[in-house]
Length: 127
Image (spheres, helix red, strand yellow):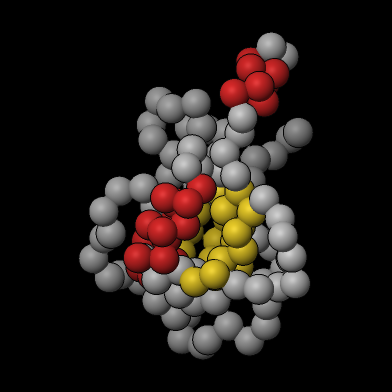
C-alpha cells in the first residue's frame, strides 16, 4: 500500500462525548478537537489510525455508514463502562448475536464484540 489512513474523523456537535467513549483514560476537558492516538511505542503505534473528533454546529442527519468494532477482554464490563460514559445500546435488527450494537452520545453506531477465546489468540500467534 502506498498510503496510510490517518486519521479517521468524526464530525460531531460535542467532540468530548464521542471521544470519551473511545478513549481508555479519563475524559478530557471540552474542546473543539480531540485526537485519540495509540500509545507511543505500542504494537498499534504507526499501524492503527488516530481517531479525530471535530466540533461542527449541526446534528447528524443520517445513520453513519461506517462503524467501529471494539474487542475488549471483557465484553460485559466494557459495555457497562461505555454506558456510564453516555453510550446506549441500539437495536438495528441484529437478533441474538455475539456482539452488542451501541451508539455514542452523538448517535454514531459501533459494536462491542465478544473477547477472543484462548484458542483464537493462540492461532493468531502461530501465524
